[in-house]
Image (cartoon, rainbow, N blue to C red; front, side):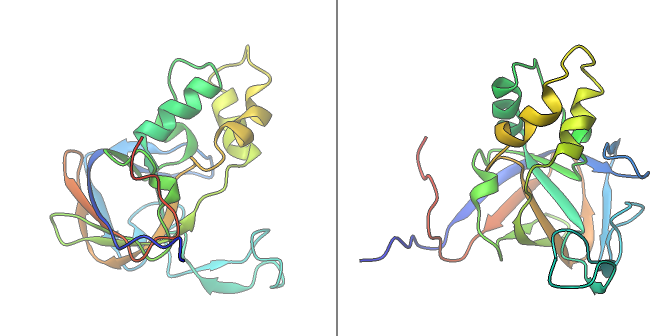
Length: 195
């Protein structure tokens, strides 16, 4: 007996688009995102290649490799759950470097690698995997709540399995707030279809 579930198509909505235009974690809202094969135009993560880092201990640090982390995708429902766990009134997607904030996909972070996000312009993002929470993002949130010294470390636990996804541009195009997004998965090992 298998725990596999069939392929699934979900529909969500783009609530915000953002560019990380500095070395900081925080991103800046934009009217639209231009996606090329190198990623989000003007974003600090733009590029076909990137240097390896702590996530790739099997390579010497700085080794050139495929940039599978061109785009950071977050769920507004998961952000609300993280905010609730941290006892914060809100957690804007741009505070932790989102490029896309989506609604209508409350368990976004649990979608498997290879999931496709398809937009009306034809732009398509292929998911590489989930984005693990880190203290750097916690510190970015803490800067907005200087009275909460606990947030930097608490974020890692509160955002487990809720930190969103990273992916790369499979097809070029433009993405705008208000766009519908169709998410096409392959076979799933587990996904909470209800609740």
